[in-house]
Length: 432
Ligand code: UGA
Image (cartoon, rainbow, N blue to C red):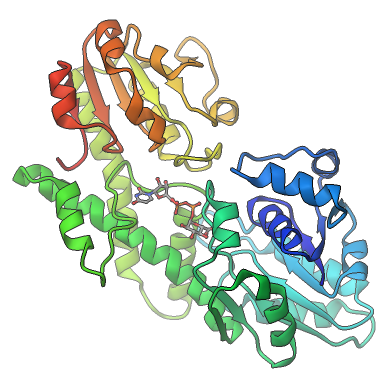
């Protein structure tokens, strides 16, 4: 099928590449000329495992192309996906101006029946608004359908999540677009849930909020475990093996961050309130998340006594493993808090150092270190801030020798307390 994707961010680019990979002809539209040029030349603006090969292969065989022109995208395809940003606003609501702008652009180029698919994460009733906008701005009376098809990919595992999804959600308000959408997704062999557009939009916010709730639950448990002298990892395993609960997304740590959970929870609280419901449960999920970070900084301060002028090594800058994304990263938040306390930082991340420099500029207070095992040198404490698996393989003997004082504060429970004790470290982690 001929498919256009408007917006080549994480969601748009990965969706475009994967749809091309399974045999569709895909045209990706982006209004940033530098991005389009880079992608045409085989470059990738983000780090995402497996994406570069996918893009290069499909560009090479002519199944994936890039353009700046929405009109060309609308003209050439039967199905048009919208995958533009929906950034948060100060009051927790979502800025839908990019979606509205794209809906108007589509409207003025519409000359025959098209299916317009909303992939961006949006508040309930957005599909209805998109349809209304297209009707309003379309010069001629052309038929079209708007579908809601939320995305569930995780950064760092996006290609894998898209190629092997748990489920595909299609929100349709009439039977006509369902057949075509089923054809788009036929190669993926995943269960397809067909519902109305409002329910599909709610599924996305409900799913992300529930996952964040699991994390806050684990973080709250970690506080009780610490006070009780219990081990949160064992408590979570013991409860999670009940199939109704599941062990995933129950890792206590520095709290959740990134461009999705914080924004989506705020949006869901805001939408619920507009619909007349005070979603107190989700407000508490937010509170637990911010308290977790405050508690962690206090843990570092309690161990060092005074943070001012201490040299602290920080392993991890990305908001989680397998990505170079530092948007709303708990690791960056932590670094900024430590800097405000007067610490001097030696920081490292396997992929996110370049992007981190924009929000955490190198200088007297912040030194970027290329080699993970060199970070502890001369440090009064070492902090683990992101769950990169390679941090679990840190050269402990070398770290012990090179640190001024052997203090490790592990915000992701990556290291083994018994092993740390054997190496002579003062080791603090979360909920154990
Ligand atoms: C999340 C969802 O997992 C995806 O299903 C969804 O499609 C995506 O948002 C989206 O809305 O686009 P993502 O933000 O890429 O994906 O990252 P996650 O893997 O969900 O991690 C989010 C945060 O939670 C990270 O800061 C991570 O460190 C933290 N986390 C995760 C924990 O603290 N504990 C856990 O057990 C799991």
